[in-house]
Figure (cartoon, rainbow, N blue to C red):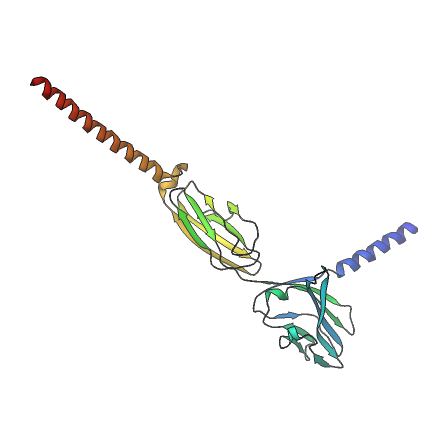
Length: 246
């Protein structure tokens, strides 16, 4: 009997923990977020995001409904936090990166609902280039938060052959040496956007011959040196024979 009771307690605790998990919301800078939990005549919207100097999270009341009357108690969100009396939903307009954090909607009837909002800067179109001497591809982005870069070869788009760690621009870049000619695509991705750019690699890198221009230069130099040496030897030989005749 005690064992059954313990199992029931654990089940209830598990349900409570799962219900407390925040719902994730990913949006772009400038978007509007609407929290899908209705508030009737009484309720509130609170925000906890950036931390204080002691490392604790700052909790702010940013929207309040009392007796059906809506007020915005925090000046930082004045003009951006709204409450629709017909639907009972809170919303925030003109989202900024610093708006990322945890939001709690409390109403007069149901338990509070948690939301984890992350505001992203969309990725910019990748800048791609190609160094013929080293057969190296380069890919960078100027804008974006939590960006991952990946290289794909035309005809092999199902799987990238290399990807970067997730970083914020402009600190994310992806150089890669290649051994085959063809069209290559760099893809920049984060949770709210995706951009691509392509670059074409010539056959100078086909067959795994890295640095073909260097090989060509060395070959030309060797040929010129051989030619000059042959000419000099021929001139000296002719002069020697001419002197012997005299």
